[in-house]
Image (tube, rainbow, N blue to C red; front, side):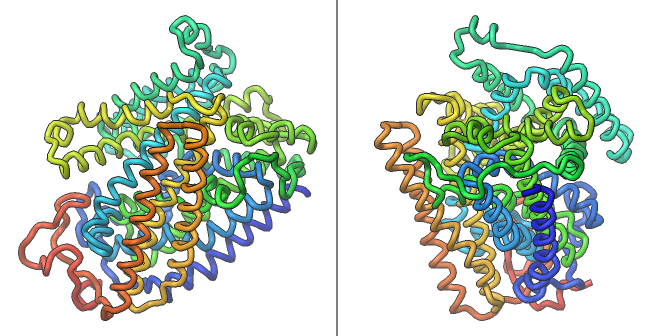
Length: 599
């Protein structure tokens, strides 16, 4: 089948989902009000709370949620066949991710742009904040470990990417300094940065940097482990820098790369008319992970991802100009990531191999699928670029730089967030050294994922990565479950039908707990005495979440309808308790009549 036909059909389904289902959510489930005064207007400060044009905000939101995960997950999941992987991406995007991302944004906006962890404490129970911190700690540990392995493998496989990736760091700092000192717009400097980066790709292709010999000299069994250590040393330092200096300008550059990569995928497909050579449903070898439940936790980002709720409620909700813009920013943002997952699927099923036999050689086992996912995507993108007249070797370096850039940005953000979480947990535990000392908190934030990334297991790198990816997926889906539970309770309290939220919530919790039980048995049988306790802890958190969600929904079903939250004072900090004073009402989440918060 020509891949462009699949792309056209899926994009049409996404368009229908946005046109009809997101409208239903906006009107009948979330009850968006164009007259509602959003926190961006109520608390405008020119720094965090800034009313932003919906198209500009969509761009920021999309690049914040679209990292390497919607590339890697689908590239592994086609192991079970491109049909099941694509079906989960399409149905998950329309009926789960859109509901989740849109809902997290809507709830946060109605509660003074507070983050999902604080909302869990308000809406579900006080215990839910502790649950949130623990889930996010394990999620970020796995995120940082997984993407360190992804980047390390790619830098070993594509040494031409080393120069552009590492020179991009001072390049981004220079752009950040320019924007900060001149107070100028980011568009032109970031475009200049992309042009410079693509020149460096050409340079890197000519002078690749190999570290295999150095790794052997230093006694590393795998060269990628040296890169992993270098990456965590870098992220420890980067997490201490102001966000405007490195993280934001790298996001500006990567936002352009994201759209360029999607354009190359779809334009290359159209010109080359590549056909999907992978099987619709694959007859996997005996002993492979089962499609149920593992498909649904292998593809997290690209179908539904709990990480998105942190973005929706953490930064996007502070910039929403009109409440009705939440439909466009939240739901269409989820469709954007679904489109990236679609691009990944066609790259590894139509662009990477010329025949069914060649494809089956790449996906012979689950270890091959997981260990070679990013390599297959890179080569698939290079194949599409070759259709457009680009040299294949140069195109592989370009594609590797795209994936590494996304993964590195995810690591930058992930280690920074991990430090915040470590400080919050230490504060609850009254451990002052970790809660107040940034160096100690940063070292703890780096130590756990570094140890996990260097962990040998399963006999080869592919299997170890596959296991880490599945654990990451289960934790990510638990985070999504927590966010959906908050959304469902809020919807039910407003006496609206929560079915659109409860159905994906139940489905995720069933698949996640099922996967955790299966994995726990496998780890115990394989005597994996690091991964087995980790899986068991995540399983306990899953059961805890199920209990909290059921209790909260039962309480909400017996309550009277909530009115809108009181405007109140500006929050002291994201997730902190608001200042008390005139207009503070009854405190966080206090509710009053809808007329109090209208334009």
